[in-house]
Every structure is written in structure tokens, then in C-alpha cells.
Amino acid sequence: MRRHPCPFPCAPRDRACAGHPCIQGDAAITTDSTTDVNQQVIDEYRATRGRLSGPFAKARLLLLTTTGARTGLPRTTPLGYLNDEGGRVFVIASAGGSPRHPAWYRNLLAHPRVTVENGPFTFTADAEVLEGQERDRVFARAVEADRGWGAYQEQSGRTLPVVALNPVDGGPTGAPDAGDFLVAVHDAFRRELELVRDEVAATGTAALGAQLRINCLMLCQGLQHHHSQEDEGVFPAVAAARPDLAPVVERLSAEHARVAELLAALRERVSGGGTDTAAVLADVDRLTADLLAHLDYEERELVPLLNAGIEGPAGEGERPRPRTERVRATDREREEVRALMTGGALSGAALPESARTAALLQDTGGVPCDWVDADGAGLGAGAVLYAHGGGFEFEHPDAERVIAHRLSLAAGRPALRAGYRLAPAHPFPAAVEDVAAVYRSLVAQGVPPGRIVLAGESAGGTLVLSTLLVLKEAGDPLPAGAVAVSPLTDFAAEGGSRVRNEGRDLVPAGLMDHIGPGYLNGAPADAAPQSPLYGDLAGLPPLLLAAGEDELLLDDSVRFAEAAAEQGVRVALDLYEGMPHVPHMPVLADEPRLKTAEAFLDRLAAWVRGLEGGQGG
Image (cartoon, rainbow, N blue to C red):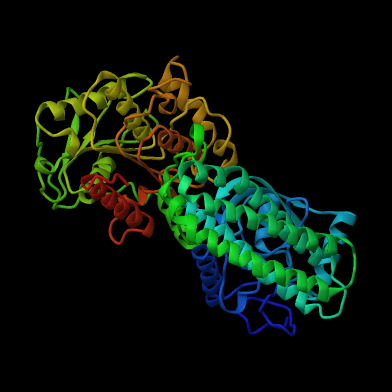
């Protein structure tokens, strides 16, 4: 098979890779250097929210993350795509003309639920392989738009599968501030304008093809929807919050009306089936000139205001949201984390000889505890109260002391591992009572609450959040902040990520059916403090939540973070891309630790410094 000079396997064509619809990091890519280039494309795509440079600057690309059919690991692939008027997008399993189907296609046959990144948005979708006349019609449309697809099919000797990606749910990529998200959406429209104009200009005197007509109509539909949302939501909120900006809102509304006229003219011309390409190009040029000026003016006037936060009348406008950061990872890093967590490599973790383990306080509220002081800071710096994971039923003291050491090192203060009572022999509320008792003993012996940080993972994360609610209800002084990694916050939850991520996480879904009854012992699943999501969260201290994007309990962290933020709590939410339950667990490994572990420890250290500076994340 002939190889194109581009690192990606492309069919020979005049325009080489610039604008080629099929950029595939799949089975047709075989060399390490090509895989590295594939990752570079993914990294640049995410860093720029879809605006690539170099040979791929004119390509319509999305990132498709599938679940490995054999490995169960997430796999991300840059793919060319086709727009569709019905809200779907189409991808074609060409594998660059290879006789074999690409790996991503085999993956989605086994696991049809996929994740799609298209720049400003990330959404889950259900993959559907088209058949019969529908498949042939879409493929013919693709070939009409770019003959390379036909060359791929002829070269491969197989019928290239066409896959429809049907969106299920999603939202802004990385949950940026409102103003920054507006810029990202605007940039997506700017890029689409460029692509459509280039495509129209490239047709010369030929009639517009079916796919190009759809691209034009989708641009019109997207802009109309975006402007309608602004007219009904953002602009009234701005006018209510800042009456002095009434002239700005009036101008933006007038410009919306002008753009609507241009969109209507373009839509009518494209829908009419005419062949006057020059007239279509003139329409696109007029739209481009007016729209770009409008977008620039809107960003200049509104982005600072939106990033600062606005509220309209009667609570309208943007609701408070947690400050969310997505911690990226390569396929190799995700594989390393999973191998480390499943291969037993973490079971032999040991404290370094420099760790200080002498008891700093004798009274720990009647609960057996272990002190670990990483750098000898002493209690003058405060303390980390650490509640371990283990499904409320198990403990691994040696490994947990190592985690306590890592927490102590990052937070710059001693850590106290709480050996709380375990279910099912001691069900709820025994463990919560124990963690609260340890905290109260620290305060009673002179450790300032404002220097104490609660921390825990999995079941321990749940106990940390439950303890905060118990302390608040009792009127106790609250700690400086709390860290919860992969907590279970809603025992009543049955759907969402617990269904969506089944098979992606290292935790079997059936385990949830065991943990709840054993811990609750008849206590209601939809009540606090056992399910912290249902508590009165107002007044809680700053929170740092972390979760793996592939874990069953992802939504437990996301929903709790959103609920806390809505009730006025300062919340930082870190989502680890493609990672399973307790993604920070590689902190147990000896040096050199994995990037994921370093990211968590660096983030924790920065967050604690933010507490001391009054920022809380």
C-alpha cells in the first residue's frame, strides 16, 4: 500500500493533507513516530479547543474516545467527520485505505457509548453503524465532497463503514468561566466560517454539492440558535445587572437582527438548489464581515463581565458552578495507571525512613490513629485528618500510612490516619462518629480548626463530607477545608455514570449493590449525612474534589460539587481524563511516580496554599 508523506496514512491527492477529511490514529498507524504525532494532534486540539495548525488547519476534526474491545481502556482518535442536519455527525472507518477495519471501529462495535470532543463541547454519544440505502447515501455525499473517500474504499477492497454519532448529553469542555466559554464558541463559529468559505470558493463554477449545502445550513442553524440563547438569557441578565451597558446590549441586539437577515438570505439561496456559486460566496463574504465585527465587539464588552459573574432579575443568569479543571492524560499514562493499580505493585508501598511516626498527641478521641509527619513541621502548621478508603469495610494500614505521608508532604503539616470502625460489624453512623471524634479531639487539644484539613478517598471521601455536615449541624467550628477523592455522595443513585462507565472503571458495578446495604444497615439512602448530596451544604468550608472520568462514581463528585457551588461553597473539581476510581492512588508508588500522582500532589499543595491565602481553590 502506498504511503503518503504525511505521518497519517492518507490516499494520494492533490491537496495532500491540508483539509483532508480522514486523519486517523488507528490500526493503520504502525510506527512509534506516527503515534507520537497522533498524540501531538490530540494535545494541540485540546489546548486550542479544536483549532489546529500546520497541515491540519483546514481539516474538520473531532476527537473520538472509545473503550478498547479487548483491554477496556479508553482510546482517543482524531477523526474527520461530516455534518448532518439531524444533530448527528458521521465518521467513516477508512483506516487510510487499509484492508482491515480501524481499531476505533472495532471498539465501538463492542462498546457503542463513546465520548466526542468537537472543540468547545464534550459530549457522550451512542454510535450507530449505518446500513443499506442510508449508508450509501451518506457515503456518496462524502465522496462528492472529497474523492479521497472513494479512493480509500477502492484501495481497501472493503465497504467502508459509516458511523453516526448520536449525542446523549454533554456540556462545555473543561467548564470554563462564562466569558471564556463565549470566546471558545465564537472561535468555533469563526473557524466554521473559514472552512465554509474555502469550500464554496473551491467549487469554482461547479454546483454546490450536497455536503456543502448541509455545512452552510448547519452554520446558519448554529448561529441562529446561539443568538437566540443570548437574546433570551445573556442580554437580559447583562441589562439587569448593569443598566449602564444598555447601549451595548441595544447594539448587540441590532447586530443580531442584521446577522439574522444575512443568514436567511444564505439559507434561502442554498436551499433553493441553484448553481450560482458566486452568489453564495458573496453571501458568505457579507456574513463573514458583519459577524466577525459583531463577535469582536461582543467579546470586548462582555467577556470581562461574564467572567466576573452576573445575575439577572429574580436569580436569572449563570448559576454558580464549581471551578473545574480537566487533568489530561495520554493513552500510555492511562495504561500505566491501570497496570499499576491492578498488578499489585502498590501493595508493597513503604514509608520512607525520613518519615516521623511518633504520636504528636496522645488523645485521638478514643479512635486508634497513626501520626505521620513528612517534614517535621509539627502541629504548629496544623494537621491533615485522613480517612482511608476501602468500601467502609476494609483497611490497609501500611498503604494508608504511605498515603498519609504523601498528604503530609503536599500539605506541609502532619497527617493523622483515623482507624475508624468498619461495617458491617459497625454500620452507619459509627465511622462518621469516629472521624468527628478525632477532629474534635484535635481542636480540644489546641490545634486551630483553621489549620486542619480533612482528606479522604472513596469511602473515606464520603466520611469526610458526612463529617462536615455533622460538625456543622452540631455547631462545631469547621476546618479550613476538605479534600474528597472519588467520594460516594448519593447512595440512592442508580443511573448516570454508574451505567455510562460500566466496564470502563476498575470497580465492578455489582460492588455498589453490596456496599450500600452493608454500610447503611437500614438508614435511608436519600438522606444526609450518610448521603452528603442531600445535606444543607451552605456554610461548608472550601472543598477540593477529584474523580476519574471513567469511574462509576464520577457523577457523585460532579453532582455534589455543583450542589455545593450553588449553595455558596467554594468548590474546586478536578476530573482526571480516562482514569478509574481513586485516580490519585499511584501516589503510593516509589519514585519516580507517575504523572497522575504528581499532578494530584501538586494540585493539593497549591490548593492548601490557596486556603492560607483565603482563596480555597
